[in-house]
Image (cartoon, rainbow, N blue to C red; front, side, top):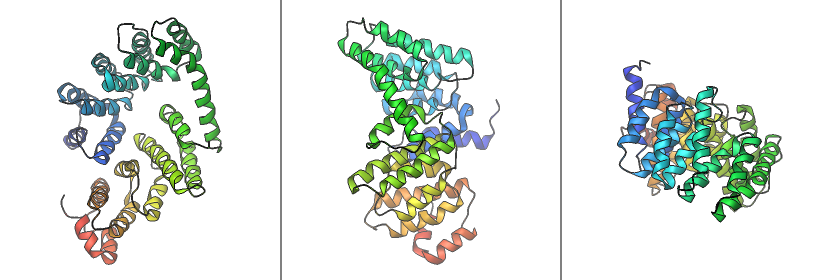
Length: 338
C-alpha cells in the first residue's frame, strides 16, 4: 500500500506522540492511529522494536489492538515474552483479533492466547492476562480452557478459572441491561463490561448509553457524578477509536456545562472526532478557566489547535472571528503556535 507523504507525516507524528508524558496527547494519538488502521501498522511495528521504555511499548500495543490487523500478532507474541504489563497489553491486542473476519488471523490469535494461558512455565500475571483476553470467545472453547486450568497447580489460576464463567455471564447481563437503558447502581461494573464489549457494540447503542450515563450523573451525589462521568468519557473514547462522531454533541455540551476539569478521555476524544462546532465551546472553557490552572488551559489549547488543524480552520475562518469578538485574549493564545 502506497501512503501519501502527508499521511506518512501524520502517522509519524502520531507514533512519536505515543511516548509523550501528556496523557491527552498520547490517548488522542492511540485513537487517531486506530482510525487510520492498517496504514499505520508498519510504523507501529517499527516503533515497538525501537521503543526504549515499557510505557511506549504498551501505547503501541494499544494502538495496534484497535487496528484489527493480523500483523499485530507477531508484535503481541514478542510482548508476551517480555512479561508484566507489556505482556498484558500484548494479550489485549490479540483479544482485538478474535473477531477478525479473516479466519486465519482469528485462529492464530486464539491459539496464541490459549497456549499462553495453559503454559505452566509462564508468569502468573501473563497467564491471567491471556485467560482474561479469552472471555469474549464462544462458551464451549472458554469452558475447555477453564477445565484445563482447574487442574493447574497454581491456586490463583484455579480460582480465576472457577469464577470465569459466572463473571462473564454477569458482565454480559450488565452490558445487555445497559444497552436496554437499565444502568447498574455502580458505574465501575458497567465500565468493566464495556472494556471488552464497546468495540463491537452498535454505535447507536453506545450513543444511547452515553445519554443515559449523563442523565444518571444529574441524579447522584457529586462523588458519584465523577464516576459516571469517567464512564461516559470511556464510552466517548470507544467511539473515537472507531472514528464515530455520533455523540460529538455530548462532548460539546460537556464543555459548556463543566465547572473545573473534564476527564482526559473527553479531550482525547475531541482531538480525534471534534468538529468545527466544538471550537467555540473549547474557547469558552479556556476563557472561563482559572489563569493559574496552567495544566487545564494547556490541555484546552492543545485540543483547540488539534481540531482547527484537522478541520482546516485558520484565523480567517468565520468561527475564529466569532470567537475573537467574544474572547479576544483567549483567541490570541489559542491560535498561537505551540
